[in-house]
Each structure stands twice: as structure tokens, then as C-alpha cells.
Image 1 (cartoon, rainbow, N blue to C red):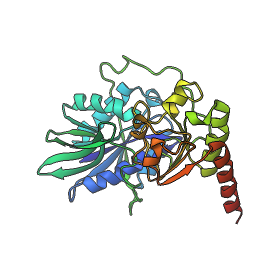
Image 2 (spheres, helix red, strand yellow):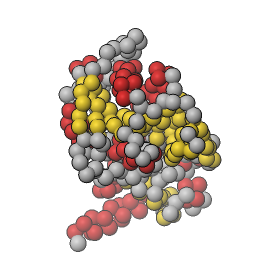
Image 3 (cartoon, helix red, strand yellow):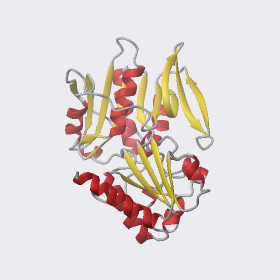
Length: 324
């Protein structure tokens, strides 16, 4: 049995969860059962119904105490589902939630833990995974023979799974609280700016660096272009440290890792710490007036010029294309 932990937002599974379904299908042995587990409050029912179109069985752990579950409560729910199904493999997204829950879950199940994988396969009875290391400059092969195995997959490592031919069954499960579930709780919840595409989910990402000059220019050029593309907004650590943007938008070694189909870097120098968070992007477009900027070494399209002149021209060209 392979169990997929389903992340969700606004009543729908996240893109990363649909990627996990594709990973589970690729990993499953002939005849091996697949199931998903949805943990949440009122909106969890809609999530379970949506993911049932992709998996033959969905476990629904639902309750008021799970409306915004702590990492401990979510761990308890996933552990209960893994024990009830006899799951040998539990797949999670390697986002901030998965990175927090994964080690906890492996400890609860007394199993193995493989983190941040870009690929996973079975080999002579063991699970073998590939992951990046040393600021994404090297690849590592990791191996786990113990079962159950908790595996977190980097978002973007797989394509989104297509719907299944038949709709799966939804089974409601009860989750008994465990010791330590209330040792930590969630504080105030601050929603991200409405209409913004989550970085981990975005197919296009526009990132701004210190070369933009100030917060007003960042808002005008980076946020504006991202809106035109229907993409997410990202920033470098220098921008966050300067107070222009929130930490949740930071991409790099100490921020988030993204792998969109299109990554547009505006005024980004391309320090290795930043590259480690975006070097799995599809097409990279860079605009910088410094022709020797390191970002150009990884760019598919390099524009040596002032972002204040290039971006307005680019946005005008996009607007003209839409009018055709």
C-alpha cells in the first residue's frame, strides 16, 4: 500500500498533491493498492471528493480540531491512516509542512525517512531516491530498506496526474488524539495577498532582486509582470532583508525552492545561494544591466539592460499579443 498525504487550500488539492499521485502510480508495483488521506475541517469533504477522481480510495480525517491542524495533530492523523491501511510507503510534498511532518511521522511509525527527493524507485526490495545537495550542485542517491518509509518529494519533480477512469471511494476515519498533540499550537493566521499564486504551485514565477532599486519599483515591475503572466511573485534574500517583501516570497538556500515552467529574474545577480532554489526551473529569462551577472550562466534568454526600460516594453508586447 502506498499512502499519499493530500495538501489542500480553498477546498481543492494543491498541485503538489496531484504530482504525488503521479509519483505513487509510477512507484506502485503491479496490483499494489493506492490511497490518499485528507486531513482537515469543513473544506476537507470537497478536497476528498476532488482527489477521489484520481485515487481508488481516499481516507478522510475530519473534525473541528483539524480545521487548522498543528504539525503534531496532522502527524497523528497520518500515522493513524498509515497503521490502519498497513501502508509501506507514505508520500508527502517536500514543502514546509511536509518537512515538519515527515520526520515526526517516521518516528511515530518507527520507519525510514527519505527527504527532498526528485525521483524515487524500487530496487532489490529497497526504496532508492535521488536528491540534490551542496546548493544543488551535486546529486545524491539515498536508499531505505526499512518499512514503512516516509518519503517527501520536491514539488515539480513530477507532472500532474491525470484523472482516473473511475471515481474512488471515500472512507471517513476517526483520529484519536495522541500524547503531545497539544504541545504546540498555531497562533494568529495571516492570509497571503488575495489573488497571488502560491510559489510552489505557480507555473510561472517572476523574481525581483536588489537591482530594482526600491520597493516601489519591485511592486511596479515584478508584481505587475507576474499579474500579466498569471504567475507567482518571488524575491531574493537581499530584497527581504531590505524590508521590501515578506519572507514567504524568498527563493534560495534559506527560502523556498521552486521549479516552474517559466522563471523570470529581474535585477537578480544570481548568487549561488539563490540559484540553489530555482535551478530546476524550465525556461529561465534574466534581465540585468550587468553583462557579467552570474544569473546569465543559467539563463535560457539573457537581456542585458535596465529593468526599468525592459519590463515596460515586455509588458506592452504581452498586451499586444493578447489583443490579436
